[in-house]
Length: 578
Image 1: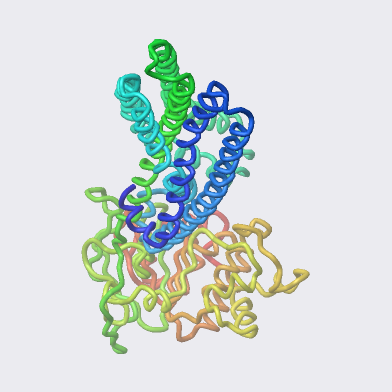
Image 2 (image 1 turned 180 degrees about the vertical axis):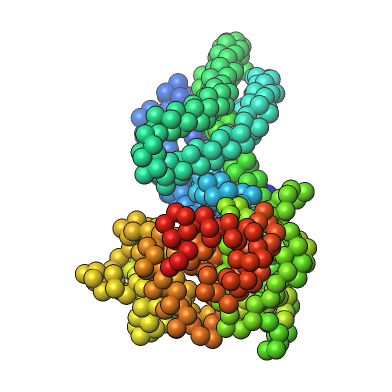
């Protein structure tokens, strides 16, 4: 927590100084009030000074109350400004840092956990900043100030205060010691609820198709009950703070009244001074309750800060290179004995892959499920880095490129079509933010998307819902292909991005890409042999290994795996003959 505070509170020095100072001024006024009350009783009532004195002192109390209110409002405003400011900056920095992480780090944290950290955890830190300015100075000052003021009135009776303090401190330590670990557990269980909620909402159609509502409700209920049980457990611990603190302080007030009565009888104290003692004890009681609640709040914030720092301290494993020396004579893409594993010490997803792709070639990549097709093409734009061997573009290792420079060369169409809320034109301009209407039209025409776009009421200005929920699967895939083509990349990677298209549209798409991208190097990942049979080169993967590289006719003769794929698809309806 101190690490975050040191980094982000520096920009709010004015709020950190003026806010607590205003609250401290309010606390001073509060400490003077019991003395005025004692004078009203001793001088105005018992001393016979009469109503004028009482009214005058009462007016002073009202004035001090008004000044205290003004100070509190100033502090509240500054605390809100600082807490919201810190929250905004932390969220922006956290979002920016998450965007810099590679796929490996994102996979490790998980999307639900990152969402919880950037929302719930930052909110906890925001609350802690607000309370830091408003109460961290005021509450301890009131406790210490009230004790000192009581000592100035009567040192013997103030021994009650000194006896109470260790008891309250012990209660606070016990609650904090037991609750801190539980708050960390609660945040992890909140991550699990976020995960289940996200899966259930995004997969609502699948759940309903398989009548899985009851199972999902049960899974959510179990996670929610587990979260509630832990929250209740820590809640019960936190709930002990107020009653235990009040019990101790009320016993202290009773002791003050009891022993104070004897001191009044002996003439050592006046009645007004005893009332002042009781008021000071009440102030201490309320301040200690605030301190107790601050302990809970800062305990939560400490757990949340640790989770936020964990993200900030995670360095992206993939960073910009120093600069690539590109050779026009070298192959556009070259894999040299490349191996890759998703987890350290785990089985390799790719094993000793070697091949070259020349400029303008169309390369098909085919294989069974889990053979490593998507993994292979993910190494080209450096979503992941090869553990062994080298991936080269233009004769330069991809690790030597700046990430922006590298990815501007590549148009990547992922396996899962992902669109963002906004218009069709806005989505297509992700490929080139300065693309003209003519470029959008051409890219859409090549991707076989122009026909259905023209039929829409607003054409390219048609609004797309989040994730493209108002479009069919095939329409989404064609738009993602058009988005990649808008940037006119040197390398176009289609990662099984035509799986939702019918055979006629798929064939038209392949012909259009071949016609309109003559100087573009195209890699097509597909489960369909028809989609890649006319490629200049086909790479056949099986269990992470390249078991065949060559043209369609060559592989039918030399590669049993490819021949089996083709024959199995032909037997299911001539799929390989399109």
